[in-house]
Image (cartoon, rainbow, N blue to C red; front, side, top):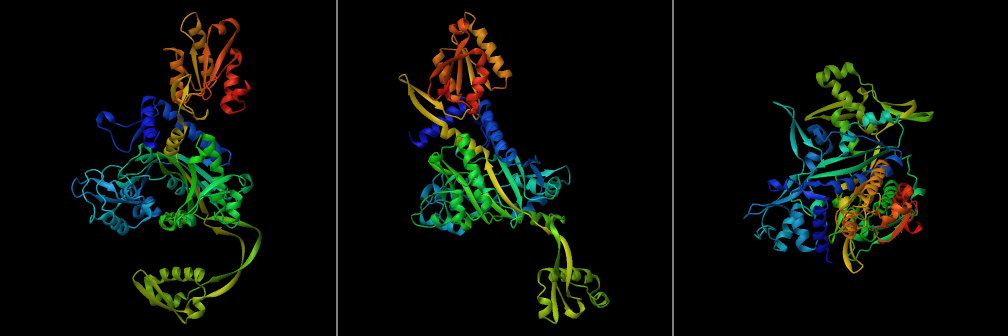
Length: 582
């Protein structure tokens, strides 16, 4: 099958079996919004729960839930008001707005056009004679503009405050940092996680749930002291990574690098040990939920592709529908976010790190002559003192180089003789220092991971001369863990099957009961939604208390005692026991 055929069949199955459907179709639909049906919402929730287990519980991190609407000040500080843009072009004929870089990628074979400048995109429109994807009109000569992706709103009635639906969950963690550091007793490193909705007003949503306007993110913000805190690389040092580094991407025939976490750090393919640690940790997690490792890689961002806050970033990418899509970003954000919120809010976002023993350090200080400074500059004197203190802290050498210091505050300039500043170097005893923590962020796109798992699990085979469609989902990801059938709904088989179904459900299993149609058709229905095990009650069950358990992937059946069915299914789902061991 071609990728397009798989995409079409998966889309049809998703609608037919309740994985996901376009939203608001009775009103014509709303592009970029999808509703997860009974099966899809369960798979999505299972993926989220497995993520919590790995990145929250087992890593010892905390979880919060922040509002999805935040005031404008937050996004002014974070830089989203200025930089959270995509490139847009408007067709001169049909007036359809399209994402300019996508038009380039779809029609030229160029990858990662998102990193190009607007001028370069306009040049490519002319070079390749690109046309409007809707009506075919020429786009050469059309202007490419920036379009901010945030949804705006108002908070409160009347003269309300402007706000935005958050484009990422991260800012909800950053703005409350002073709370989290207290809960962590001011000890680094510590991590805060969040799973929640984010909103991006995409110019042209496409590829089903790959590019949408409402999405779910699972993010971890790890706050560290880069001079003292290192991850436990031994936990992941042997994990094998498939890397597409920046250097290889810049070559004409760049190659994929197959290496281990330890080797990637030693050879400086990955500069940050923290990034390497999370790449290894996440690789195991992707395998656990059913991502096909033959269609998976880590790609490093190119220099002009990096976000404004990141010093380095690697994307986990999966191949679906013939394209490589980003499913997770692993970014080193430095102290950018905390520094910006500290500057804009006026609050102190630092952490005090106590020394093991007091230290004597040299410190540059000023004690300005206010008897001269006050009469000379009046109301500006206090501002000048603040600037002198800043200069003493950051540029003490200028006090030794000049007789007069030139100070600029706003559009005003002042001159202060050095001998009036009271500048000196003092020895002070310090018990610790204040630092602004740096941040390592793995940010998982849950919707894209969900779609990847479905696409990589989709399969077609032939059983007893009959073609079947099967979703080979991992048992703890599948929407239904076990289905219960009576071979036929008579002779007491239905009552016994319903009893078993009830007991399994009360034992905590995700179950379904089906007594409709031929047994083969019922198996096929469960294969399509990925149910790993089916239990069938037949006449032998009534005679000796045994029933059959069917394995989805092999379609083999084995008999077990009815009284042990809950224990056996639990062992199979958790992987404690293999089906072949029954």
